[in-house]
Image 1 (cartoon, rainbow, N blue to C red):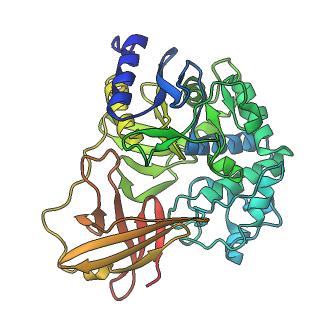
Image 2: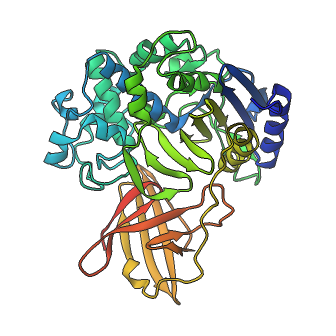
Length: 459
């Protein structure tokens, strides 16, 4: 590992980035081979100024999906399930929005986001050992975002169904299965997945913008703000950065944990990392998906990883296979994406020799006929209205989650390449891009792919 990456230099990088991007607290760990370096900065809670400590735990959000996929592969290795069997083989009462989906969606399709199951179903089913069972029972009306196995649309609901499969075949709750098959064999001491394990631990609060004091961030009043029923998709797992790196190192070490225990077969490790689906258009460097892992094609090589976001916390996991480097950054507020890009560029890129691709920019010439894109495109959580005015293509979007709804300001969307558009500044850490798909005989698109979700034309 580069001599520049030592604990003191890492702390200075983290301190400066947190200050620049208004992040209350963060924890970072990077490993190459057997060498691991970590640093922390800031506070766990801006009101009581509890400092972030080595080993402090943060929510990892959707990085949990890699954990859930790993659990499923452990159960496959144990002979308890088959990836290509329909989920209904293990959940006989499974009912989805179509009879075909109910009967045919496979475990593999749940894990690689090709099931078509509408993804942003985040209904609160309370607590208790049967919370996932209750969640799956309420999936009966979920529509399909695309034909089963033919397309890609990021699906939280699919992962929650996979978590319920894990419960059924293991005979354990999701939380207990994580401990038995992953957390305990890996020797993770600063990882929890249930609220009852939080008291007395060094745990970060999430922070949201303080509307009364602009520029400041206020802590949330509870650790978990997302429904417990979303645990397999990412609502409950808390980890230290060091534990997250240890988890990923097992994948680098062909399924063997740092303590020498085999957790996953080499076959399953490889199956998770290979390309299962290519995205309709790249989301910055994310262009393909495996099982759990997304796959980044960057300058200088490929990485696997996942990002995660809960309310007020963000996590970033990157693994460079060739150099055997793992980096994990978890933050509790502020401009998280911008900080992640900054820190990874300063720390991981010099170690691995990779760098992110140049962000997309608007093309000089716009298509002659923008009217073909006009329409209303809808998914379970998102509604996009695309329309022309004064020769410009505009977008106005809504986000709907249970009893919450927000509407974005009108924004111009600018042509990048064929049927691909941009609607944020090119200097943004994660530029907002999307594309139009599935053109009918009249030449009009029937799908708008944005934010990793497929939204269907409804008008």
